[in-house]
Length: 193
Image (cartoon, rainbow, N blue to C red):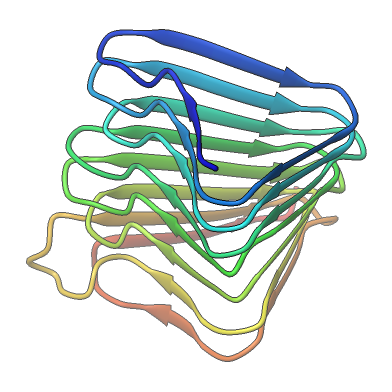
């Protein structure tokens, strides 16, 4: 079973989960087609996705996680997937778990993620700005990777750009294997104050 929020072209859809459990056997698409605008917000409870989560799949999609929510994604989170898609993932509380996470996945797309206020993200690998424009800001949250973090596209000639910002003294990032700055199309910035 898949979930589509704002499925058709030029449509708008919003889901607010304040508790309970939602389990999907397939994928979740937030902003599925061109011109669509979708939003999914969870403040408490559990959201389980067996396969992939797409915030911004051809359209514009925003996923917000806060409070004591637990979100588990069995496969990948892909922000900014296809065309001029725009994907946003804002984690201000709770815990997010995923296998791999791509921010600014495809050419012409944009992806943005914020991790703040004691929120936790646990994933295997992460790519920021692989082919599109991707940005991650960690401000008071905890990011734990079992594998590698790759910032920027694979070559200087590629269209993508990756930005990674760490802000404040309570931010924590743990990378299991390698932190790779793949090309000059990347920015890594640390601000302690």
